[in-house]
Image: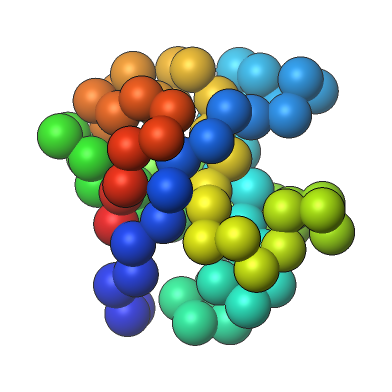
Amino acid sequence: MPEIYLKVDSAYPEDQGGGKARLDPETMLQLRVAPGDIVLIEGRRRTVAKVWRALVTDWNQGKIRIDNITRANAGVSIGDRIR
């Protein structure tokens, strides 16, 4: 699986606590993943999340939306870069 770097943003309110990673279609294509796949998130620590497609307003922005639990598990904050 290729590596890319993404900027961390907060999860949509309905995704809180769900372990979802919202990605745009271009990023999913680059990573060769589809909705429902599990991805490894590497910040200061490693964790995993399930891929879901981001809303159109988030497309082509180079970001990943993850909830506070996933951010804590990865050791990252909003605005950090992860791979």
